[in-house]
Amino acid sequence: MRIRIVGAGAMGRGIAQWAASAGHTVELSDVRAQAVTDALDFVTSMLERAVAKGRMSAEDRAAAVARLVPLDDPWAAGEDVELVIEAVREDLATKAEVFGKLERALPASALFATNTSSLSVTRIAATLQDPSRLAGLHFFNPVPLMRIVEVVPGAATRPEIPPALTALVESCGHRAVTVADTPGFLVNHAGRGLVTEALALLEESVADPAGIDRIARDVLGLRMGPFELMDLTGLDVTAAVIDSIWQGFRHEDRLRPSYLTPNRVAAGLHGRKTGQGWFAYGPDVPAMAPEAPVTGRADRPVHIVGACERATALRAALTAAGAVVEAGPEPSADAVVLVPVWGTTVAGAVAAHALPAARTFGVDPLPPVGRRRVLAVTAASDPAAARDARAVLALAADGAEPYAVSVVRDTAGSVAQRLLASVVSVAASIAERGLATPADIDLAVTTGLGYPVGPLAWGERIGAGRMLELSRSLYATTGDPRHRPTRWVTERAQLGLALTDPGTSPGACLD
Image (cartoon, rainbow, N blue to C red; front, side, top):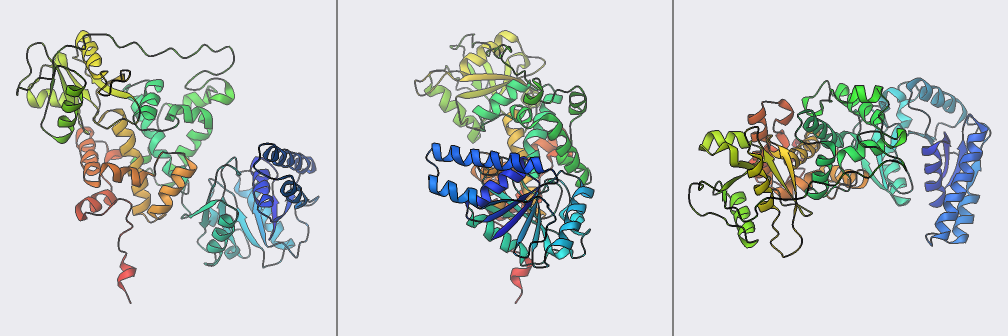
């Protein structure tokens, strides 16, 4: 296939490398001639690096370079061009001008694709004489490494175009997901679940950014915590995406932005690129302070509240670790009291069960991926008792080094539960709106965001019933509509279906 790429910046050059390496002839163009020269040099150097690392043969590199065709004029005639991929700046007027000129220069058989990440594909297409020839083809940076592409049909896109683009993408070694033309498409929309909830936790002073990141990594198994991720992406970019998606979905509570970001963006605290974000960066920046060591009495008696599965599992784990776990129905006068919270608060348990407020603490019962447990303290907690409870929780059942124990402020569900509930709920809302299939949601998120498992599959590991219980408890405890249960999770819990099951549609029941 002969592909013309208009825009030779970071995205355009990445797409050019990807397509040329897969055997396609690539016309690379830009309104700035130097940009084309720089892009060709960059792609050549990347291909040479691939040879040096043994990922490509010298012959394949030479063939790929030969398939790169620099153009002096992006609007040059091209009877053989089958596909145009636009990768210019995110501005509707600019993209409309580009496609208007291309429409006059190229045959009607050439398909048009925009790499927009935030603009409506339908609005871009509406500027053309023939809007049916355009669709979205959203790549992620760096293109050769981010092996996921969103195929986004506009309202007028011809039905045969998305399958054709999907076949092209997958023939070149990437995965393609078909996504509705909605704010944020799929990956950026799904990613709001993690960062918006992390910001909400910070607003409530549940933990600091480093503490939330540690829990996200060590309990949930994320490669990067949400605040590390925002610093890497750039808070200016993240805040703009959060705002645009929230506005695009007409102020949907589940996507509500934080008041924390505007002032930080205005102050230039954008993250790695400015040297200071949620964390500081640079050669002269001291290392982050280590966590406070675990002190206190690990031999202090512990009383675990409840007879549910979560309480039973915690009781068994601490008993196996050598903790002094009380068996009676009431805590002794010296015992620290642990409450496995699931969408609820420690304060609520203290009031409901007449527990001693000074020595009652919350424990997150989510099984950690790493060696970390989370202890929640209330405004009435005795610090000495909290230190003892932390020491008890640090005990390891397998003889290895003790667990790290994060100490957070009491909140409904604790940190990891709220992050997980938000990730699953945002993905479930995408599924229930029919914006993408469950399989595509999980594929796009694991590939595009690097989560250890897709959000719907993640929720299914916990169980639809337990996820529904978590959302209901969060909603009832806080009254915040951001936590309201989704129809997707509710129905599947009631019907005994997996969260990953697309279910039966009305159309499937018609002849």
